[in-house]
Image 1 (cartoon, rainbow, N blue to C red):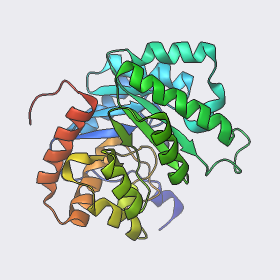
Image 2 (image 1 turned 90 degrees about the vertical axis):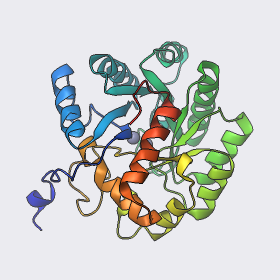
Image 3 (image 1 turned 60 degrees about the vertical axis):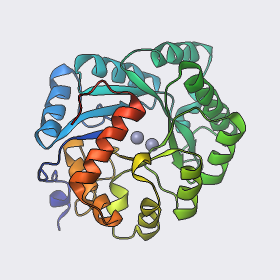
Length: 282
Ligand SMILES: [Zn+2]
Ligand SMILES: [Zn+2]
């Protein structure tokens, strides 16, 4: 397949309704203003994706995510400093993040956590100690405002679970783009954490992640695109958007040996419950 062909957007999936994209980045998907956000969400809604949580990773993105959630009632926001940007946390940004966290359209504190992948690959990546400090601050913020904590974890499984246990996890913890193995999944399930799976679960080389996806009870599952990244099989490498989500739900249903419509119903209920979204019954 040629390079240009690989970059073509995936075709619309067969509709699957209703589902919620538990983690996306609308700005990085081309969202600029109310009209471009509405276009992305119209496309998603046409295949059954009723709403999305758009996630920030720095202060500019956080302000934008809150605005997007105000423009369109199918979008909610999650705000925090991504672990790679943990160095931006100071008195001023902390005050602003605290104010955002109580905004009614902000449904989670995130994405925060630990990212060891970028440590030695990017000069801009916050060092470990700074990431730990910021992660602990965000854990406390989630507890203070009583909203879910949305975790980003890259190559930091053990430290991440240890910091959470040490600091004391909030009532609801969402492991976004879960990437651990079966043992880590079991540990998260025992702690009552919610595991959110992205397109990576559908990849051909994802046997260990697929084993993890089989041990999660229905009520602790979410599904996400993490768009514009992590486009599911067989469109890996192509641009991702929320409308692509049904491919991942179907892949997850296959992996778990269940019916996709039944799984979608669980996922919809879980999204409503976990994020406390004001959405109707199915
Ligand atoms: Zn992430
Ligand atoms: Zn993300």
